[in-house]
Length: 96
Image (cartoon, rainbow, N blue to C red; front, side):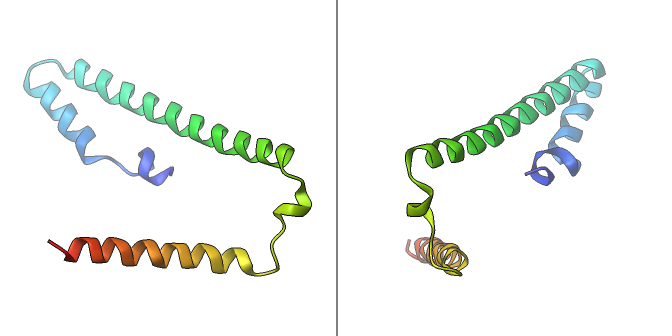
Protein backbone atom coordinates (compact mmCIF):
# COMPACT_ATOMS: atom_id res chain seq x y z
CA UNK A 1 0.00 0.00 0.00
CA UNK A 2 2.91 2.31 0.68
CA UNK A 3 4.27 1.88 -2.83
CA UNK A 4 0.90 2.64 -4.38
CA UNK A 5 0.34 5.47 -1.93
CA UNK A 6 3.27 7.69 -2.64
CA UNK A 7 6.66 6.09 -2.08
CA UNK A 8 7.01 5.95 -5.86
CA UNK A 9 6.76 9.33 -7.63
CA UNK A 10 3.34 9.88 -9.15
CA UNK A 11 3.18 11.03 -12.78
CA UNK A 12 -0.09 12.83 -12.06
CA UNK A 13 1.64 14.88 -9.34
CA UNK A 14 4.16 16.06 -11.90
CA UNK A 15 1.33 17.00 -14.27
CA UNK A 16 -0.36 19.00 -11.49
CA UNK A 17 2.88 20.78 -10.63
CA UNK A 18 3.64 21.61 -14.27
CA UNK A 19 0.03 22.73 -14.77
CA UNK A 20 0.28 25.03 -11.77
CA UNK A 21 3.52 26.49 -13.11
CA UNK A 22 1.97 26.90 -16.57
CA UNK A 23 -0.83 29.08 -15.23
CA UNK A 24 1.62 31.10 -13.17
CA UNK A 25 0.63 29.63 -9.80
CA UNK A 26 3.23 27.06 -8.91
CA UNK A 27 2.31 27.35 -5.23
CA UNK A 28 -1.21 26.18 -6.09
CA UNK A 29 0.18 22.99 -7.67
CA UNK A 30 2.32 22.36 -4.59
CA UNK A 31 -0.69 22.84 -2.29
CA UNK A 32 -2.77 20.44 -4.38
CA UNK A 33 -0.08 17.74 -4.32
CA UNK A 34 0.40 18.16 -0.55
CA UNK A 35 -3.35 17.95 0.06
CA UNK A 36 -3.53 14.80 -2.05
CA UNK A 37 -0.64 13.25 -0.13
CA UNK A 38 -2.12 14.09 3.26
CA UNK A 39 -5.53 12.77 2.25
CA UNK A 40 -4.05 9.54 0.95
CA UNK A 41 -1.99 9.09 4.11
CA UNK A 42 -5.08 9.62 6.27
CA UNK A 43 -7.04 7.10 4.20
CA UNK A 44 -4.28 4.48 4.49
CA UNK A 45 -4.06 4.98 8.26
CA UNK A 46 -7.84 4.72 8.59
CA UNK A 47 -7.94 1.48 6.60
CA UNK A 48 -5.12 0.03 8.70
CA UNK A 49 -6.86 0.93 11.94
CA UNK A 50 -10.12 -0.50 10.64
CA UNK A 51 -8.46 -3.80 9.76
CA UNK A 52 -6.78 -4.07 13.17
CA UNK A 53 -9.99 -3.12 15.01
CA UNK A 54 -12.15 -5.52 13.04
CA UNK A 55 -9.76 -8.39 13.81
CA UNK A 56 -9.95 -7.65 17.53
CA UNK A 57 -13.73 -7.35 17.41
CA UNK A 58 -13.97 -10.67 15.58
CA UNK A 59 -11.84 -12.38 18.22
CA UNK A 60 -14.09 -10.99 20.97
CA UNK A 61 -17.27 -12.27 19.32
CA UNK A 62 -16.06 -15.65 18.11
CA UNK A 63 -14.12 -17.95 20.44
CA UNK A 64 -10.53 -18.57 19.30
CA UNK A 65 -11.03 -22.32 19.14
CA UNK A 66 -13.66 -21.87 16.42
CA UNK A 67 -11.32 -19.74 14.27
CA UNK A 68 -8.53 -22.30 14.10
CA UNK A 69 -8.17 -24.07 10.79
CA UNK A 70 -6.25 -27.27 10.16
CA UNK A 71 -2.58 -26.57 9.48
CA UNK A 72 -1.87 -25.37 5.98
CA UNK A 73 -5.48 -24.58 5.08
CA UNK A 74 -5.16 -20.79 5.09
CA UNK A 75 -2.55 -20.59 2.28
CA UNK A 76 -4.53 -23.08 0.20
CA UNK A 77 -7.77 -21.14 0.72
CA UNK A 78 -6.28 -17.76 -0.13
CA UNK A 79 -4.47 -19.07 -3.21
CA UNK A 80 -7.65 -20.78 -4.41
CA UNK A 81 -9.55 -17.52 -3.93
CA UNK A 82 -6.98 -15.61 -5.99
CA UNK A 83 -7.08 -18.21 -8.77
CA UNK A 84 -10.89 -18.23 -8.89
CA UNK A 85 -11.08 -14.43 -8.96
CA UNK A 86 -8.39 -14.30 -11.67
CA UNK A 87 -10.24 -16.83 -13.80
CA UNK A 88 -13.48 -14.92 -13.32
CA UNK A 89 -11.88 -11.64 -14.39
CA UNK A 90 -10.27 -13.33 -17.38
CA UNK A 91 -13.53 -14.89 -18.52
CA UNK A 92 -15.35 -11.61 -17.97
CA UNK A 93 -12.85 -9.77 -20.18
CA UNK A 94 -13.14 -12.36 -22.95
CA UNK A 95 -16.94 -12.26 -23.19
CA UNK A 96 -18.11 -9.19 -25.14
